[in-house]
Length: 450
Image (tube, rainbow, N blue to C red):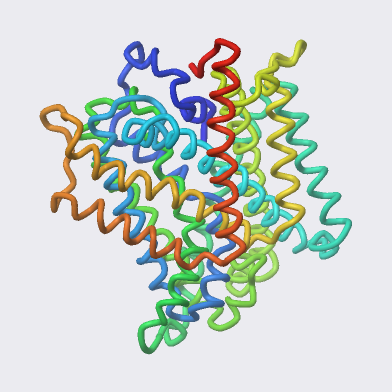
């Protein structure tokens, strides 16, 4: 996620400037950006977790997540083709349901999704490093290494945005190399009988696996954040986003098939480094080492990107009055939002130190699914309450897509554990209380949320 995109995530932050922006993003640029965002570090880890639950039938979960993602994305596209504000999904939710729901979407997206996802990636990074140094996988060495990782990234981002951006951009190629290597080299070593599965998996198991897997599918809609800069959105958005979704599904399905076909039942045991195990089986120690280096660099780059972008959203929210003003402080020397950076890094560190990858991934998925539910419902509402421009995209089947998307999201959320439900409910309750308390406080001071 680029700084420009995340800066647009705060409702009202840059809306006054939308009309001044040039519409230069075409189908190819938007589609490429969407694929780059969607293919994150999560896909390096989740295949083993899905295989552990469903075995050879794991491929079914990919199609479930693909269908759910396509339905939600269609709702995004319908709103995005005629709502041209910057801010992506958060702006769409605010457009449909008002400031309170916009703020809740902001909290679920930035805190529940972005912060928690980065914590999960940090755990995955340590699992990758434990491939060489097993001691980093547990105990004090694990916590100390997390502290060093977040402390180092915090220092880099406080010193300057250019340094932080360089670290984030360096992972773009690194994250694709191990994926393509595993697919291209591994396909010649697939044992096709290991891909056979008998009978449809139980709904409970399928839902559990899909909820974990959704961690790898979420985020493609972030490409729509610069909506005010997309050329001919009624045509560009559907073409680019549907094409990007199909590409991501094909890539992920190919990866799961190759991993399952090469490792068979052993894939479920490779919860720390499934791709390295595939490469090791295909080309030996050199291959697994190369893949692990690529995985570690990719995960670190994604983590660096999250710590570059997310604090800027907190900074802008503080400037607009949504969050305490202290978060809007700028370092006198480096001119960076050092308080926001330090705050976000601390939250990420605490979550990473206290939870495992699986639980953090599920919590991240449930948070973004709440935003997706609001998008589906918002598309249904705006379809009948908002006048749209001629040629604006309309989902086929009338309200059917929005209804089906809502049902799929609710079904996925229903497989959350009590721990995730309590965490999510508590976060929403605290966010609602904070919203009204903050508004009351600002009203007494004669200020407003800009």
